[in-house]
Image (cartoon, rainbow, N blue to C red; front, side, top):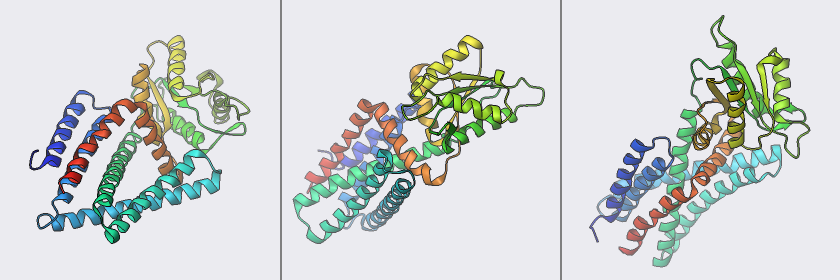
Length: 332
């Protein structure tokens, strides 16, 4: 076995990340590989703490504990706040549960330091490595979301596609209202005398909705002064992939050669872009603002959705973390 197997694993992961970034820069697997590399380095440093990296290990341990504590408390508080506001929805309860899980890792570490034991140590190393890796990956993802959610509209946009979200009765809910206002802002920013954009409102009718999301959006735009002949309704879609495909088909029929900008919430931009590539729809995606209270929970949900989107590759890569974990466990 090499003298520094964790560092060797980190070098392999980092090299894979560089290659992946060059070949497919939009894929989230690049972030997975870089996170694996950093986690492997952390394992290597912590495994050689005795008289070699004492100061470094102390700094890393304190920093990791603080990140876990702050993120855990934020997720728990956000889950409780949103559950009280909107009721016990699965996604909101999941946010609080993830926060509790991070705090539980800190408790597990404290118990190990008090109790000790080789078997317990192996368990703690595995749990902390997995928790650290997932936390790091989530933080990288929030960076993706933050940057991609602030993109500018496509120059020369002819159509603005607004993706549906929840309704409040027959009116757009807060999330959807912000998307519509972002679409109106794109239209208002067009140069004087330029051809006015066409709005494509996309969203079907859910089981608990009194009308289609497309209808509610069209009504909202007309109330804001948009002429009816500038609004196209796509009212069959029930998910983001269908939003994109059905809207593209509608624009292809009515305006071949269009240049479309898709408007969704900022936290949803990255996954929408991935789905657009997957379904072969050439669109540019921009984000609308989201309230801070909802943003963290929504970003966590998007993180899980992106991992699930390429679950075979991403979960398979993540399982490679077992290699540096095993070297740390069995070297003692």
